[in-house]
Length: 554
Image 1 (spheres, rainbow, N blue to C red):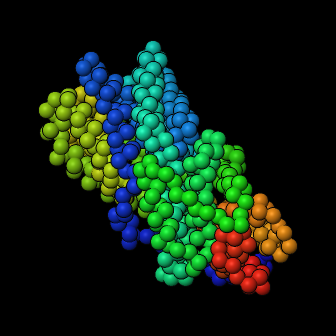
Image 2: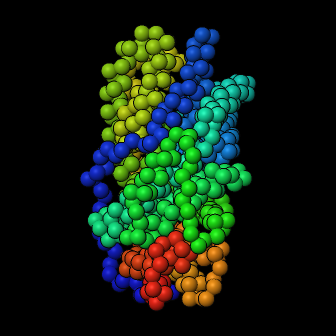
Image 3: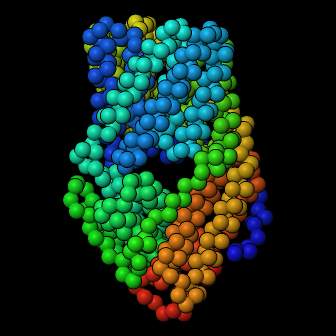
């Protein structure tokens, strides 16, 4: 176990980043899937209600239709389960909101209920890793429902409509399974291979190697989670598992890796062709199964307590501030605050800037399209569909760019019950956005996360123990294929968790200095042990036994 003492230096000055906050990234490889799915989920119910002359019910129909945004990165067996829970969660939030709206007209009470719902939705989505889009869509739906005129007699009908469109959204998201049943697993595996190849290009020491390695381990972990969430093992899954092992080994020993071969394997996973066979010499292939590192739900809720407190406090104060300013839709400020909260203060600040910029530009877009939308109800529906598609196309490039489409869509939805004065809508939206972002960020700073440093210490201890366990096996004469594979995977997971925990803690304020030197030493020694373990398994070219033993030491 590493015994290097913590660095006694003072915590570095915290700076709020500006450079790069609005920079555009590459679009998601599957951007078209949620974009097309949400249009397919919204269009039939919306045009049906248009034909019936009941566009005032579109808000409830969209509550279920927006569930089509979720779980596109999940294998279809897992997607089916996740979407059921998303629809049920959406219905639960809407039910609480509608009942509350029918029982009280107090805006203060409704904002309080909305803030508590937002906190619960944030914690549950983060703990269960439901996303993107995570809690924001659920909070938008439930918060808007809080301020919709409602009676108890109307609640069952509105919930039934949301449940029906949620069921339709489930069918839309499951339909691609008929054409490409293993598509999500193949994409996750290809992503892991390409990320490993990018790290191999750095040789483990070149420019950007630390970031490339962290991205590689995150992609590998996502691939394992994808494969482990499928049903009984199949020939395709076994072949994909071997490829993920190859990606993981490449991260452990980049200098012994053929990056071009990894990219060739990744390219062959497109379409529905056969999965390439990646031989694993001297390893017991039946033992090369991913280790499910997911902790129980209750264990994942504890670290999210500061995030829950930030969300509840920030959303409540944002809503109250909007009410104090006389804005008629305080849920806009509430949803803005709910959308800000990320893993740490630095990321929350970045999201606040992105949200404000995207919403302000989106209001200007609304001003440009409102004459078209007011040509008639069909034009209004078509504009909403276009913006829902555009939001999913653009949001993976940067959050602010997607908000440019989300904002006019949200403004147009308010007009399904009747056209409203554009200038008032725009002014209220901008004010609520600024208020929600400002108050929400202040709440994030006020609610400190002092346990972030403790979690780094625990992650360090876990990584050290995993490395020592693997080193002891390597020192033995015949550790066994299953034991070596389990030790290698456990160490890889521990190192990935250590990096993620350290990165999250580095973006927090008001905490003691982090043991950065110990983290670096633990990562260096851990990756040397990973490489030695992979060689012992026969996954890399052989070296002299003395060198192998030396590599396993810290």
